[in-house]
Image 1 (cartoon, rainbow, N blue to C red):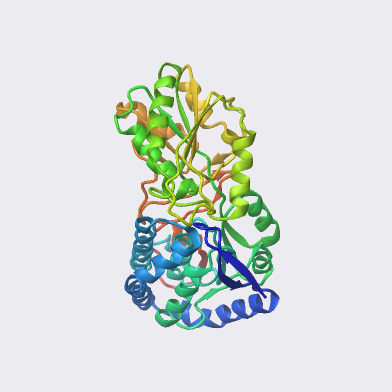
Image 2: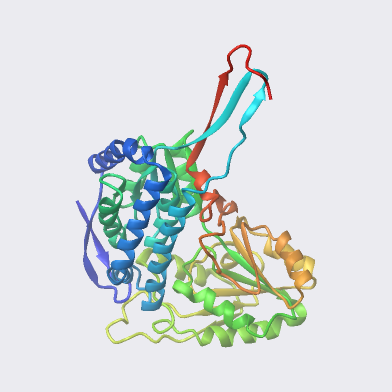
Length: 453
């Protein structure tokens, strides 16, 4: 059984991909289970060397990976090439992290006994990733899971299976057969994977789908990154480049980034200037030149419905700069919505497109209240020339990641994760290793007469 694929840049068919069902899911999980013993038994050094080998294959095939990413997402050349480079770096980072674990509690903690803690892999991890960053989100999940000694079965989104099939091919060469299994398919495939005998599920996607994953996973461990609706609190003394920086971050990947700025919140005294400056900055960002299309027809329909439902009195769309033959693609211009109520759907829901709403409050405290007023709590930013005020606001923002005078600045060394409706768990950094491990306490009774201490 196959499903048709569409080029988001043109709206035209671009081939097919398999729809995995029960037999394919069972075979993939069984293969990962078979590979688990040998992979988890490797020393951290040997596992690290193999992950370095996978990173090298990704770097050697960077042009091919980037082309596959563009085919599924429509990303511009610079975006796709940069993300492939980040993926290779991420596998190199976790190759090192696998060898640099922190020491757990150990010693003679109970009279007459010696104890220590072993950190063991979870086992087979089912990984489900979305279409906005097909390769990079898979690396965020798979790299720490593999470094911790797990094997993985990864299901890409239905519309973007391309680069993960290549990753699984390279993983078989570098890591061994069965260590990474790619399971292309649709939502039903994902449900079958969650219900299969995997030991853990790592899911990145929508809040509604995350709730379904949690219900199906039962008592097994789950790691959920369920999107965001990031505020950007802009004070009157914000740096001169604030609005251009926000426009660039809001349109990167056509705004289809969970941590992208979505809601600009400023003080009433600065509101008109903020609307004007954002309108100018977003107007300079052209779909087709500076950023790509929305990913698929369902996302286009959802985005258009949210924009249509908004009661914003001011709408400032930019223009399109699409190439000939791309007019039927999933392109949407950069858009600013202003003069809208605080409970507008484009404020309370994650729009996931090249759009910024603008709100205002009379005081900094009220602006902070607006920033923390939505259930999502993944990322946020503060813009001000006052270091003290900025750090104070960053500390009080309800978000797993906060930036001061920047947005979307991330690196493998720093953790990323949500709170509230944005889920729970840690991506990136050495902390993510514990996401995919479980502790085992081992205690030995000492022989009679052995001295304590």
